[in-house]
Image 1 (cartoon, helix red, strand yellow):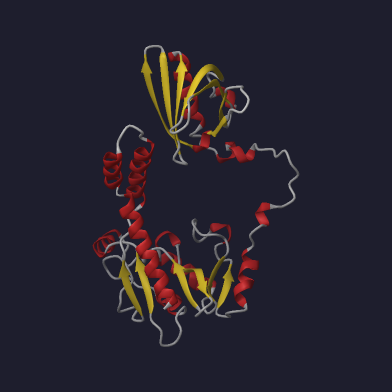
Image 2 (cartoon, rainbow, N blue to C red):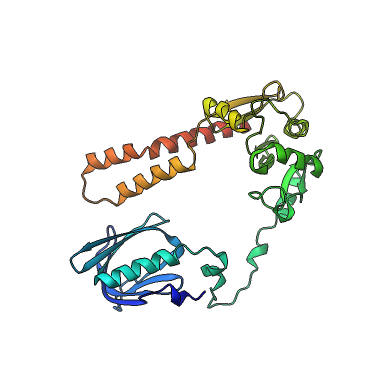
Length: 324
């Protein structure tokens, strides 16, 4: 596919750019395969270079012969373009929608980017798990690197190399992966050098209504504890939601099977709730028409600060469990 097929109108003159808290800029709008560019062709005036992949949504409005496109970006910017001519506006909007929703990953900008400088570092090797693991191997010998997820064969959302207890072999990890949602078996996320405590992450156990259990999972979880120590499982769902999940095949760690662990429920809303809240917050921040009382009302109505408080409270609890 050629990008030219998606660009109905590559250039429009006399376009006016509006951004919150910035003066309006009139200039020429150009569309390329990966960028929306607006330039006034004047000295000391900032050009707009916007990646199509940074565009979240667009709205169109028309007043007589003048068309307006409002672009909502993934980095929270809201940009307004006033375009003379209804046909030009519709063509630009249609092209932006097509270019910002390309399906093939190989059509994205990184595959076309050609740096204007000499590349002196291979970014694929700037972070090596083996080197990072060596920093901790001097402090503990209880962990190992596992390549069980090579080619993402066990879990699509985990990296190919993970850190797990040394006493657990790869075959046990594969069995645990079938017992955890999304194949996300418990892996090391953080090691606290001060006292040897750790934070691990995993998906929910698939206990279901029959109370299914997995001996390998219990062994893996307990392998992270020192003798005589208790651990904490922080479930970011409410107890009610966690219990309801059993009816859908999910669930939580039963205390009878994990006696050394105390389960704590700290509810954090799921992705779609946080996204809706964030959209309301961004709209409030970009609305310049209301006074302080109205702004505070919109801020409260978004529930964003409530979500942030819940997340920080949970993070604080996890830190206290590790340090104390």
